[in-house]
Length: 511
Image 1 (cartoon, rainbow, N blue to C red):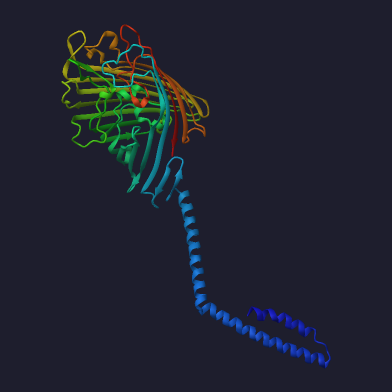
Image 2 (tube, one colour; image 1 turned 120 degrees about the vertical axis):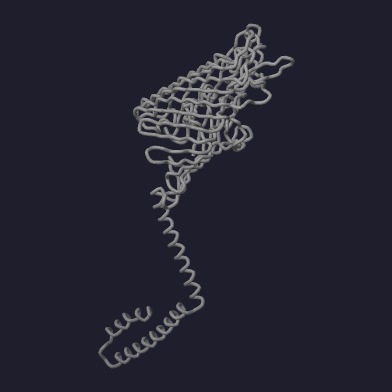
């Protein structure tokens, strides 16, 4: 049909050019007749082609292929448009600076956030051992003066979100150990949020005691938490927590299994013919994390914590920084716990019976700088009285520690800090076989200075940290491998402790 229509202008042109004489008219009419026949033949061919397009086998395959391609294109376009709309509204999935990678149902009731944390560390520890001998009760360690190297201090993977509706929250967190890389379950709980600020958490999670432990390790001021925290923290436990929160007050109560307590009591250590009673951070109570219901026999374990804030928001106190431009505010906390621990066989009664502890803390943010101070006291009653130095016996330990630290942003993304910590484990009185100058294992005194740098801006996913710490006393009872302080030694024959210092650098990456 297209060819026929195209021929019509040519026919019109021929008629317009017809001369008036008879011969010319006859020739023109003959030419018109030939054109008509040619147009008729072309029309027939076009009709056959149209019929093949509609009915022919080859044409049917071509039409079906085109239809499938069109359907695929339309589906892709619609899917892409729907996905973009849903992501913009926080729908089906994607990545968000606060949420991390996430998935969500269309109605938002079922969600999952996937977060990760990696801390890559290099540390150098130096001790002036000299003629020192291992202090009784100190964890076993190399006697070399210096040690340095790399480690993956933390590598964590966390899954959290909601089920049923946004009031049901869950979290599962896996941590990969520094030695061997074995995956360990840290958190596994579900939390129900009720009206009027109440929520109930059940499972395994951080116990609400020390403020320094509660804050995330990703938001620490120094490269690592203090040794006071490592010694007195209750770590993670299994149980339930009831919390109530208002705009200015938060109250938490915990009931569960055994609470961890490092260096909480002397243990019997046989050396030759003498039995020495010692303490050390490696010889404490492990706690109820990742244990079966009958693995740890604790008669009871309770924690209570109350916090009050003036100014600022609760979320800004989840880390230990006060960024420039952030609201000024203050947070005050008071907490305590009590537990009764079952006897441990083979320790001659040198294990805790009833123990209680209390702590008070204060944090003030100035919007670009902050200070944080806390103290902690722990009283431990032993199962049986134990012999002490100089004769007599005792059945308790009165342990204490304190930390003061402050940070200041010298630029928008560089923070300088200083920290001092001091403590006493009250264990030297049980080192009955030790010489006077070898019993200095219960004390702690450390000064740490350093800086944090966020190369892509504060509150981002990359942080570089570095600090230098100096110990004025031997690190024995308070030693903690995760903080890179090597167990130190006390001097013999009247010599004095030569000091220990540690340099730590760390690259932190969050996703």
